[in-house]
Amino acid sequence: MLTLPKIPLIDELTTSKIPVGSNIIIEYEPASKWYAASITIAAGWLNQNGKVSYNTLAQPPAKIRDALNLLGIDCTKMESGPQDYEPLRI
Image 1 (cartoon, rainbow, N blue to C red):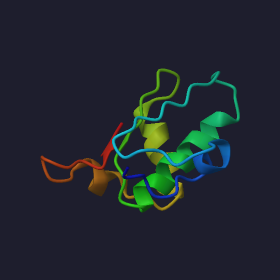
Image 2: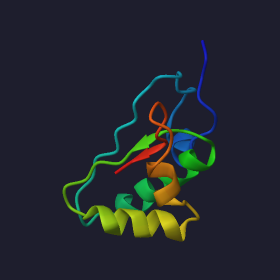
Image 3: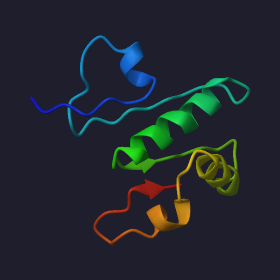
């Protein structure tokens, strides 16, 4: 079975490797510390050439992009990837 590379924070919370093709959903209350954790997880995964679809109803897309940019992610470049491979979708 193919497994994903190390996923920041998620690997510490799971008991086994995550199979390739899996979807990881992080759900939390708007005031939760998981907001910052979810941004960190997404940035870490993007840095490993993973794909991220970040969906939120509580934050505007610009705020998510700003947070990812602070962690070294070039959102403009990643969101405008080739048609068949957009690493980031907000």
